[in-house]
Amino acid sequence: MLKLMQAGFDGLKTIQIEMKLLPEKSVLPHVRQLNTSSENRLPSAQRVRELLEDAYPNGMMVDNLSHALQCSTESIFGYLEDLQSKNLVTQLENGQWIRIDRMAALGQQLIVKQMPKVYDVDQPTVAIITALFVEKLAVDSIIENKQTFVRYKTDGCFQDIQHVLIVGVGGGVSHFTDKNENVRLGDVVVSCPVQICENGHKTQNFTYIHTDPLLNLEDNNAMKINGYVVKAWTPRNDIISEKAVELW
Image (tube, rainbow, N blue to C red; front, side, top):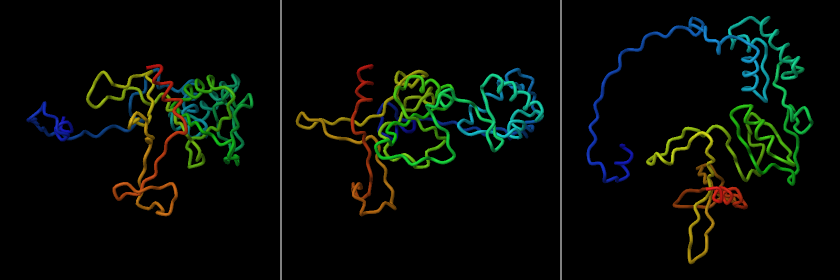
């Protein structure tokens, strides 16, 4: 509400704010002292699998799994053996356990210690970010003729990314002013540049603009706007935004 008034919204003239002091926080019990009788929190093979899926493509040591589930390492080994018999997990050379990916097992994906050298023509141009392992499997199932690199974080390895798709992490985002525009679970949100028409022709706009005071002023890709040195990015084609408009 204060932001609306700050932006010159004339529908509000005055806002009355009543402030109350909250009572002092009581000392919270240690996590090990909490009641963990809920079936969903009890150690089980399913809980071990969920932890490994959350860590994928990284692995986890038995001690870490034992600490996370607050149970003995013997119990963890039992759960891991059960999952291994179902071909769901495997143990790496360094002793870590990792969730088995069907695509990797079929040779369509390769998990390596270091990022291999990729020629310019083979550089990935689409980045798909998922929050859950099941979302990754869903994305893998709908992509054809792909060469996939699975990374926990990019670390600047991929410089030719043109499109970024974020799966499963945008649900429940509230719109600033219009409740009908709230992002809900299952919605598809496409970030695209605003097309400005001048003399009947669309002008090129940018999807992402970044400014950094330490940018090299001699950078050919940099430009100066209102005294700031900025770099701008835009996809080579608008195929994703065009398809989103067609669906809309």
